[in-house]
Image (cartoon, rainbow, N blue to C red; front, side, top):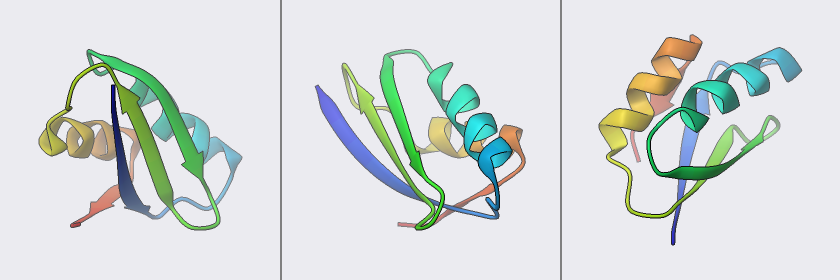
Length: 69
């Protein structure tokens, strides 16, 4: 199991959280996504490491920006 944390910019409400959660959850191998609106942190639990580019694509698809680690 792999736990990774990312920072997402531009989220302002519950809808934002739902959009990011939905898109990131669709990535293969992702088991759980936890989004903290206040801090912008997105924690991804997966059965194997997920490429940051895949996370970035999902976040952009949701309409937000992944901040470089």
